[in-house]
Length: 405
Ligand code: SF4
Image (tube, helix red, strand yellow):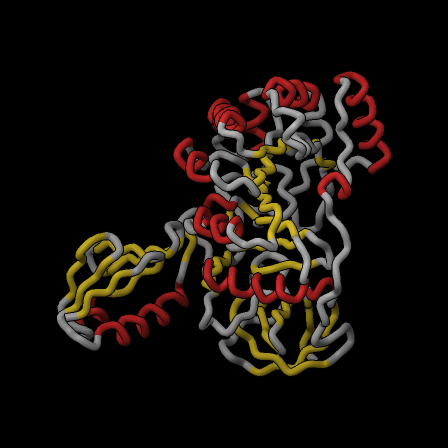
């Protein structure tokens, strides 16, 4: 008899398949006929499966590996890649998942891609309408690799959970924040979120983490406009309630609207006043409002043309005068500074031998691995473990792109 219990997996039986959910929103289906080859199977509870075969664990792991190749995101049915300790995929080198270190005291970590909204201005075209490949990273692997980087950096840092999407979709988020909170080298844990998935009980759990700060996107104080900008169903009053509850619980909150010209410039004054009414005490030294300038990105949704920075700063200055509030944010306000550079194992124009490991985000592109780094390879269909020679086209901040030689 083998009793297999998993923290990150849950199971449910369907007619001909066992549905396996990974970290809540990702899933694959294993045919019952395949499982019967291991032995008689019984679901004990959501996370526990039992086989009448002592050697079931190894055989079941083999099936998991096989069917995780078909992993999907339940939000949009997109193909998903699970990055874990044994995946052979490092965590440095890609802009969408893993760890991004831009030689500054702000280190970004990205445990998941995916979003429950579909904002009309999204710079990474995330959400329900996305047809990109998604990624989800094992929490312990992320923490372990982050620690290696912290050992190299050797000074206090802010860790920013800067997901391309919504971090509350990551089922291990609270445990991840707890690990970051307990790390003495990390002084601030910040996180961008749309706050639609947070609940009072989650805020209660997070309230004890004094290093944590939420950057909450809030684009309008009008229900209809907020929903239009979110590009999908959006409950503004719920989000406002959650913000107020978080503030009441002394969780640090920075409201971060994106100013999209022609859509919500009139909303900014209302948002400034809302933030004032929140009554965040000045003794709590973090900035509590940061209006962001909408920018056009090649791979983003672009409902309009972006303002030039001069126009944006003129607008901010006028709004500052009108609301008697300081609105211009600088890196210094967050205490961000330069740190030492992480060596690059290869540089632009180098030719490197690499192995294709998985599909990349865009259709018909792959991720290769060489010398402990990820290299994005556009326009190359993924073939598992294929050996390739790549010329490096981009190496900035240890984020690599290459093309076939
Ligand atoms: S909440 Fe953020 S990630 Fe999600 S669609 Fe909107 S802008 Fe994109």
